Length: 391
Image (cartoon, rainbow, N blue to C red; front, side, top):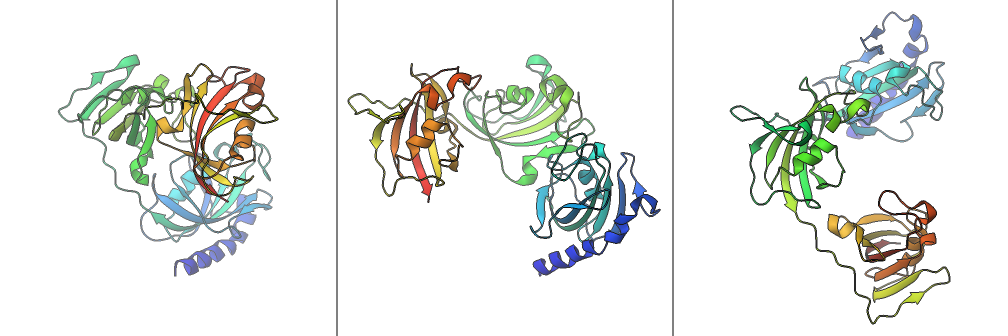
């Protein structure tokens, strides 16, 4: 029944084309304060979508001369989360005007579309026309801001302010810990601009690694497992004068409600000891040591591998590790997804293999290096374990 509904509403959008062809002269179109023009061709039922909701749509995308440059009709419905920076401003605003089962035509000026950016089929500073059918809306989990009633606002580093809602237990987070966090971000007017709670999955952050804005990173050091905290983050510790996509305005303070769902210290990492083991060298200059040969067929180009690794400088200093992050990586082999030394070395391995690769600079990051971690012309050592291979 759901598939039939998709088709019916998609056809509904197609037959509305005549509305959009003469939109400039059509008095039925309304204009919002932002400059978005719209025509609701069918209103749906239920609740209007909100930030954090997952929505499914069919759409036809046109230039102002009515030429089609993109459509979901052959690709199937498009799904995304509202209010997560995945859409142009015109879509974010326009989709909130219709309910599930509804259809709308949007005439989106450049400042609400792609501005001066050139995209396939779209010229710079283009006004665009979209015919959209809102097929389905899945509501995110309801969110209530943390209450600060009866609690004290504390001062943190660099003008960060915070309120401890629940203290949690155990040790405070330390640099390098793996923090599993639920978060909700608010603008000063109380509107939500992003939330893991809506999506249902906590995010993993390596504490102190600059994966998140500075104010958030500083707040993590105030937390324990089970801690709930409200952070009041000034613009300089948030998104500054650039803002964040179309979600956070420039020079805007933000408020974050954070819950530390889990806190796991990094796994102890030590470079594998190759003393007494044979070092094999290939014609390219790659060297490797076999700690476990693994089983099955050799890995081939285009095979997809799941890998745990730890990377070291030749002095033994660790510079990166998926093991420490508790997060293996996955990628296709032989496609340039990784440095040349990896692509060559992986094709000597099998599922379950454990190799130490000694990679000369020209098979690594070369004269450019990989700032700020890898200096130019640096030889590297990687301990690699193949967890899985899809052939």
